[in-house]
Length: 330
Ligand code: HEM
Image 1 (spheres, rainbow, N blue to C red):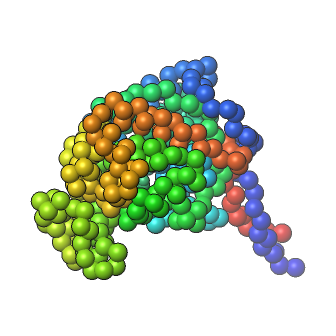
Image 2: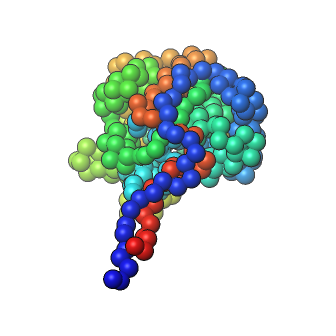
Image 3: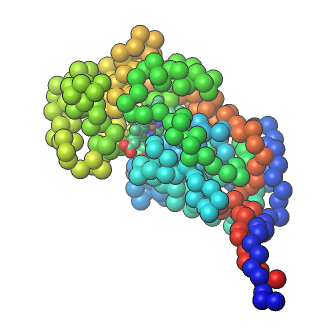
């Protein structure tokens, strides 16, 4: 009888069983990897020296990871034969950046304390450091997350907000995650650093509400600038600054909104809806109030946890126990 091919799955190289995450707390790695937070800060510093914007891109990863099934590093998984990951979800494709900075951090941590620090926690520490190194507030991060065993592009598509969103839709979305209207406005202040593509605003510029008309909330001088940067039919991968001081984490973003100079529709809308407008005004007048609310929001967002079992991934892009298909001769 000729040899037959059998196809089945084996679990490769998994020494650590999936586990439930312990409660989050500051200083979680104090005993197991005391230098963890210093290592993360160092890599972020170097990344920033190479390209200032990279830290804004790193900070954004926390938002896109935490809203989709909790802060579990699911965002960082590459597609595999068994799973379509989140990297190519609508809000992420051609947009999220700096995954390689997370890889660098993981590599540095694995050489000091192998198998100890989760990728999910790396995202949280890196986001905090991005803010601090850009001139923003400092805070103690709560750690102890596990990395997911899977990811969901579908969930990301369903959850992550569009730059066209209005304040009512954004409030509703944040409420789903136990984040208040104040959290929404403060966390939107993360757009104090970084850039966005023309792709994200052409609808706003040329077809607001499908009417073919421009968004009336844009200040005329700023509108002229945006028209030049992002002409109708132009290259939509061109980028513009999210506020007037895109390398400094400060309350300029809110000052810009009060002057009709918000970049995204989802930014400017916050100055049109009564409750969000009040917070925009407060934060535009007091950087201290903004920083305080921002830190509270980041901690609350970081507390969104996955209900699924997890592991400490060795490589943030793949699960440790990647099922693989093997052909064997019978
Ligand atoms: C409130 C709803 C939000 C919407 C609709 C939104 C949407 C966007 C969009 C469309 C971009 C530009 C993408 C591109 O053109 O490629 C962007 C950039 C960015 N977002 Fe948000 N965002 C929101 C909230 C947040 C939150 C909560 C954070 C972090 C805590 C965040 C952090 C950032 C950062 C730092 C950038 C710049 C990234 C870079 O320069 O690479 N955003 N956001």
